Length: 114
Length: 111
Image (cartoon, helix red, strand yellow):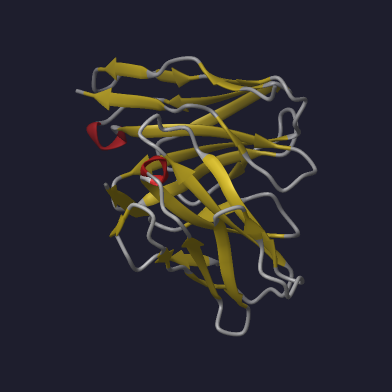
């Protein structure tokens, strides 16, 4: 079974600084998707960024980028120029291409200090 | 705009009660999911459904059942609620795209 590990239960960053959230996963498959979801206090889950495993290029979305290391099974999220609105719980998630079931990590609570 | 609606934001029930959590999506999605979220444990999959009347167990199905009589509606049923089922419940749906659309969650307290 696939597992997703987020080793940092909590992280903090100063406003305007850069922070990196870690995620590793375990799978025997070669074709899959990886995601970062954000959950602010409103509880609404918001997709931040996704990566397709067969693409070598790291995904970027504005201030959010990933470092995808397929051989190491690592998928970290970098947030640049952190803003107060980035404060939230962040979840890393894995999905096989062959089904729609998402497996989540335990989450990292990010605090942004003014 | 895409919408997944969970019928209650907060719910308080007594031990032993039968509890229904309802989820409706307006996107004609085939796939629907129920997750449970607990602090320090992340989201864990309870059940999912690929089509009407189809269901599959997720990672923690014990104590739960589901119903999908219509494509747009996926219900989670707690046959006899227990205190260890106090949690936040999230419904989600998706179609051919890989993006999962979530509802706003139901915080269930079982006393």
